Length: 239
Image (tube, rainbow, N blue to C red; front, side, top):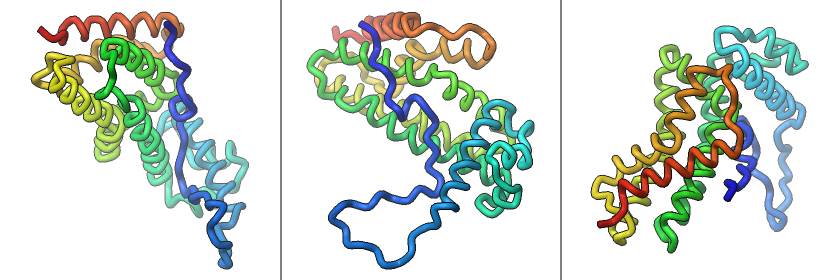
């Protein structure tokens, strides 16, 4: 059975830089002036241009002049909205990790209470691999790994809030499934790590070390995910 199509959160890098919270319909009208929409448009254009260039050319290979040109704004507008290139890069990565945190929570939601645990884990594996194997997500991972020496704290925060958040959610889910007798996972964190490598590891390694190589088809990804899930279920089947 093919994996469900990734949601919009999984499909693109959603950047949350200076976004205003939407007003509810029953909220009283605001009398004070809100943010200047021109400023919001400029920030969004700069963020989109910077994302495109950072992912294509890397941090060192991208200049503020190029960002401004692609965004269609003056160079001073970039500096008016972001103090410097380092600040812009940091905000872009942290904006993505906020989206990644939500994805991690949605990915594992419902697993601890699943009635068909093998089916739920196979479904989870298909959705998980389809999401992280998307080209833009892989380019972001490569970029963060490449710049980890320059931005060690940012790389650590990305790991904590993206792949680490998934491991944490899986650990808690497997702990509950072990308590229910649905899995034999006395060390749920190790089980979460085993699941992650069995489902994701080979595909991510190939993509990260051979970025110009062929991209697996959705059918190939689904087969890889299902085989990884089956190997996990065999290892952690209750006695």
